[in-house]
Amino acid sequence: MNGSFDSSIEEQAKKFDFEQASEVISAASGHEFNEAFLKSLGEDLVKQIQTEILNGTYTEKTWHDVTGSSFNVMKDMVDRKLTAENITNKGDNGGENFSVAFVGDILLDTNFAPMAHASKKGGVLNCIDADLIKYLNSCDVFLINNEFSIGERGERINGKTWTFQVAPERIQIMKDLGADIVSLANNHVYDFGEIGFLDTLEHLKKAGMPYVGAGKNLEKASEGHYFIINGYKIGIVAASRAEKKYFTPVAEPNRAGIMGTYDSTDFVEAIRKADAQCDYLVVYVHWGTENSTKLEAAQKTMAREYIDAGADAVIGGHTHCLQGMEYYKNAPIVYSVGNFWFNSKSLDSCVVTLNFDRKLNMQVHYMPLAQKGCETRILKTAEERRALFDRVESYEPQGVKISDNGIVSPS
Image 1 (tube, rainbow, N blue to C red):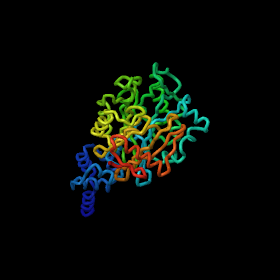
Image 2: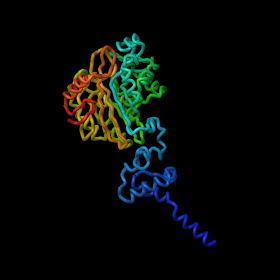
Image 3: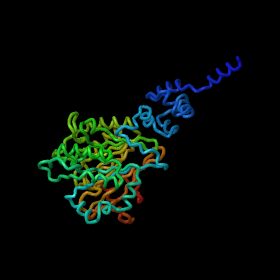
């Protein structure tokens, strides 16, 4: 009897102490990881994390190395936030890399040239290079700028030269192109007033299309949207400073509108909050002078403010033409990606893709496009690709080199 009793005590002593592990891990990480959650991970994984803490080798990267999910993802798991409205869980794509792609403006209003051309061609998808559509659908996350109001209500903004509105069913076109999220931080989402604006938010929600850069109040407009991919949490926030004459209201605590960055104070705070929640944060901003490769002083100043506040990449649009690029603190700044499919002009265009490996190392890829005759295609010959790359390299601030295969690096 005594021998059996002593053996039982010995076995109990050998059991891993999850309560103690919870105290150690919570203290080291600055976030409460309760005993029940750690038990769900299993003894082996928790032991590895605790060992690194006790050995002095623990960092936030330990979580992904050990569990396959980053510290930010694990925090959301323990806090039961992974089902939040502003989080899309893409899971594991089964590969070593994942990609997040960005383009500029799209216009789906039937009163303008692109959609008129599409009606003759049998649809928008027949106006976009088939290989480009295939590529965009292959990206893990793809963002496009939603440069219009969605719905059938509201009144055109008085005194505004160009106003755009599309029927709700055309959201499906963006989905067919591969879009996972849209930006509403632009100068056309409010073209049909507050009713049209609020309808836009509602139609996107009903269609299951996430958006950033606008909302029913400042809190909502400033929120980021987050994608969980291969165990990492990638965040996107968006804002606009596109208008010289203000037609589009900037959101306030009790007023609907876009996220503004005319004065960067509120947006910088939004970036800080988003950065604290994710592993990699992209700022997508609508700014600059239309049809000009010359940068406004505010673009250069604010891009640095965003990165200082926690952004890992800044990608701009609005100018309807490509602008230059540079790096600041190892973070890429793409001042404008131009149009994607927006008007009848012949223009250079691009897809900017951030490619990540399993260690979250990132490489920028620049896919050269041409918008011409209300169609958008990939530039495929070496000569036309190199010519576009050379043009972009020459734009101020002349801060990058683009290899023949589209890899961007600091100059």
